[in-house]
Length: 86
Image (cartoon, rainbow, N blue to C red; front, side, top):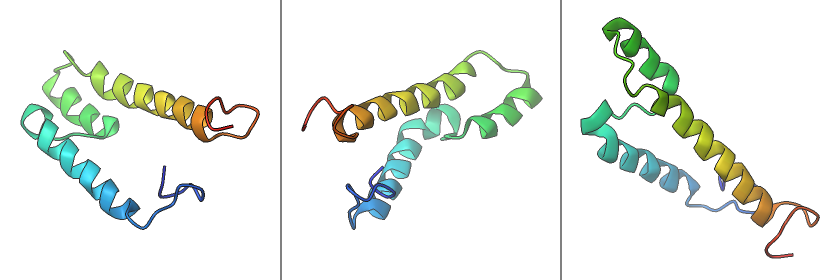
């Protein structure tokens, strides 16, 4: 969020985004080939007909996005919706 939000913009945003991608690759490389895109995970699942844990690629990012929206809205939203740092 710091790369696009004017209030939280910092000069380290590109580095931190790259560091996040690197951490995801290191954490998930041996498990799933570091697939971070649900659409990218869909193709191999169709070809291999392997659907055991495919829901994780769809539910995980959606849950993370919703949680992030709630946290950002509560902490850095306008004064009416912000709970902390009024």
